[in-house]
Image (cartoon, rainbow, N blue to C red):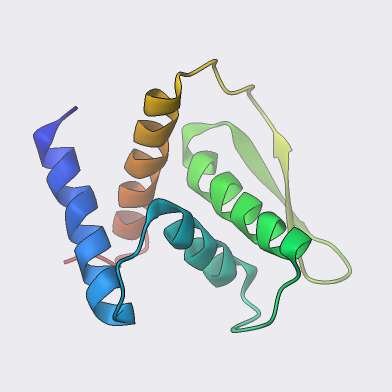
Length: 114
């Protein structure tokens, strides 16, 4: 794995861990991105809604790669995407690397990293 990329990812994780006062893992980070993209602010979510929030994050992160295309909000204000391109079959380590790379790009695109 590219060492520069790993350093960038670790910097994102350290920054967020310092901001939230706890160690942040990739799952927690996906949840935070999903909440941010949902745009409803802090809220209590059911278990299914938490999964939906994480799905929002995945779709948001993979949209720049062409896998998803944003369609708009439903009547309840939840965003929806359509699948543009089926994700290739990836091994778990490759999936994790793709998500990490997408997270780093998300923070760069949104000017959230130094």
